[in-house]
Amino acid sequence: MKKKPLSQRIVNVASVPHRSPFRYPGGKTWLVPLVRQWLASLAYKPVQFSEPFAGGAIVGLSVIFENLAETLTLVERDENVGAVWQAILNGGAEQLIERIASFDMRESTVRQLLSSEPATLLDRAFATIVRNRVQRGGIMAPGASLMKKGENGRGISSRWYVQTLIKRIHAIAERKNRITFFQGDGIQFLRDNAHRSDVVFFIDPPYTVAGRRLYLHSEIDHHELFRVMTDVKGDFLMTYDNVGPIRALAAKFHFDTQEVQMKNTHHAIMSELLIGRNLTWFRIQLPQPGDYPLFKDFLRNGFGGNQT
Ligand SMILES: C[S@@+](CC[C@H](N)C(=O)[O-])C[C@H]1O[C@@H](n2cnc3c(N)ncnc32)[C@H](O)[C@@H]1O
Image (cartoon, rainbow, N blue to C red; front, side):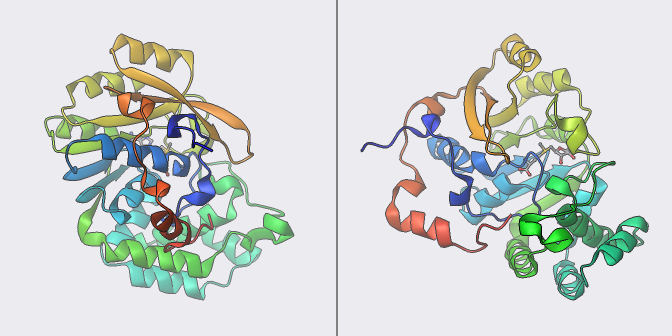
């Protein structure tokens, strides 16, 4: 039977190797096959792939691990999330790993850790990793609560995959010379890099509807983001919730849009919006790395496994 074009398939996230130490709310694992298709459609290999709203950075990490761009630049406003990237990329990976490996994961130790103000960047990074693993849905926004039953009734430690975390942190640290992290505002980063035609941008801002519940920093000026994108010389792909005000902004600034379906964590089919200058690559079927059996096997079984 002939395979459907990627644009009509609902991506099976289990087929995408998970590279991030985070289980990130609103994470874009499902988009990785489409990003491969986008990058394959370009006539050049980007010098830099940038994620100005990095979060768990699953897309950028996949690009670097699969060698689809020379370098990766991540920008994130949340200081806690940023601490994890800084620790891993700036020489603290081994210490972070030691903290993870030696942590006695119980409700009392978790409560104690998460109630104290971190004294160092490493303390902050470690507390963020723990918080992300023990709170419902990985949500780290104020007001999010600890998991009670967890997976298979295993309670608070049910997402505490020590060996997987260690492997992922090691693998990212091994590539640290190709990855740069900036703590700051993604829109300002876009303004500063708008003139660069050798950079491509993957833009996944906090969504207008769900953002507030999911992130500490959820308010951004969506109109200004769209306006800045008209100045950007490099190619870009933006994702958003498929809602009227965002479709209106895309139309106002003459961007191409495409609805795409994905399954959320509750297996409900959701419609999201891809936005770019020209999304023709989405509508035609290009060969995908995953279409070749050997590479597909590698992707399935490759480093990192699929625990999220
Ligand atoms: C939808 S999430 C990104 C998820 C990411 N693509 C992933 O797959 O893990 C949006 C992120 O933008 C961050 N953020 C919010 N305002 C920001 C700003 N002004 N500049 C940079 N990052 C910001 C949030 O903290 C959140 O991590």
